[in-house]
Length: 312
Image 1 (spheres, helix red, strand yellow):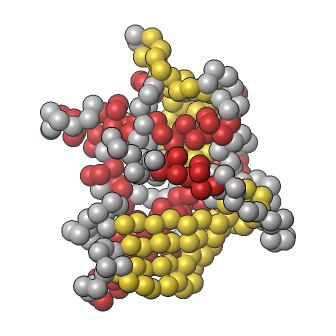
Image 2 (cartoon, rainbow, N blue to C red):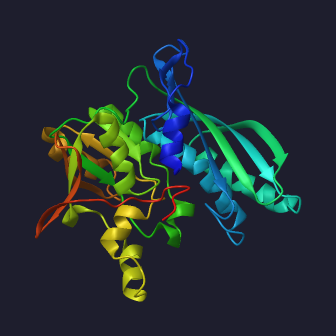
């Protein structure tokens, strides 16, 4: 049983109450707690030594990544992060100075986005370091961008460049909070998700929940410089397009919007965020499945990005 199968099993019969607008299955839960004009976004995420970082990873970047993952999910709902709680599960051999530096990394990123680190919990974990972050954010009432709203004919967009994140980006990515808020405010987005497991995997979450398909154009996928350099340097490295589709941990935004807004969106984006690439990579289809087209035609895309517990 892989991660996706386990999640489907565990969430099939979860209890809910009158405060729950959106439960498990999106980037964040959405709660209506009677806040005037706003819904509450609620998210938790974790990083584990040996999975998301190594023993040699600088402590400040471990903290930065632990917080950044949650902020990226709030960005994917078009929301504004407000406050977080942090749980540290520490091995017996931990170094207090290193743990303080982890918190310094979190604090630096939190201050940049005016996020409060409100408290948390510490516990022991005999084998390795684990950091879990629970975050809350705000979004205009009824305006959270879900995974389930994509419509046939929508244009599919991706921010930034994809692939090769293992060469540094997975630790030092910038959560697209400002960009997500701007997109949700200025355009009527139909669906959005952050790219943590790779475009080939994460886009499928939108397709599954929206009950649609998609056609991607290989020439439009924004391949990172690092993915191209790695392919040139190592014969065993993934081809750049494959890396862009499956590497994961880019923490960019993928979203869909009605096709007539595609050109106005691109024009407005260039003025607002001239330093960040925005690419139209394909179109939502009423034919289920994910397809990739190039000069040789269109074919079914059976690739997946990172999946926890997968056997291969």
